[in-house]
Length: 332
Image 1 (cartoon, rainbow, N blue to C red):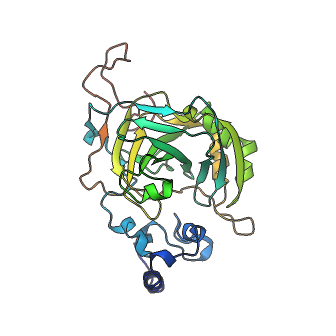
Image 2 (cartoon, rainbow, N blue to C red):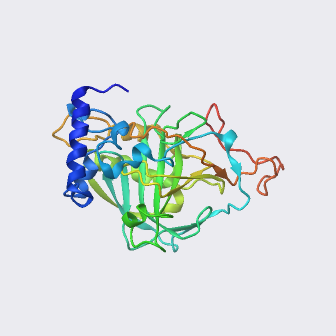
């Protein structure tokens, strides 16, 4: 990737400033830190570091460049390893619906849950219980891109990521993100369909999505059933990775569900009309808010899909199969 001398000097100058100030004084607030990176190299005509520079402009983000367990990755189904000890995931909502605030962060849609009704997940590759902290949505400017993870080199129109933290070991998500066994992120690919997922329909219907058109817009949502976002499958793929945003901590267990979820074409169009800028600034679509895939570096990608044995829920006794066609990326 080419880079002008002016940009290189800016990166060097920024590194020196941040390094001399120390980790505690790198930024005056979390908001400044969140603002000083982007998925796209030059928004609004000013240099703000894109993915290729995340690990260079801030010593606290160096894992983004030198880490060996980074995310997202390209899942090659032919290299997956069947693990018979991977049990089904369990979702516990206490039988109650939840509330949360949906934000336009300028980077992605973020639904941050209130603390009144908690949602926990366990089982699967998890040793501990994990609590749902946030739901993020990534999406593309066209249907052939938009998911952070790839499947055999191909992308989906979008990806939902449910971020959970280990509340048995750590007091909050920020502390968990910096420490071993800290986070579990459940990833669900998004496809376009005539019938939307019930959970996503409440987030992306016209009355709701138009409330968060611009950066920093927020809207409170009530009576949400998190279980509804999950596809009807107990099959998944899992690997050890990182956050896909700075500081790229390598503390994440990823769980990729073996079926997609759905939104309508109108809802996808509405997502692409969301701005990564404020109303007074030039419009830049939030779409294509994805980090490029990272090297697998000898990591194992495990699955509870047994390709050689008949499944109990398979009445015709055929072997279980991945629920996506490799080339067409549609349900069998």
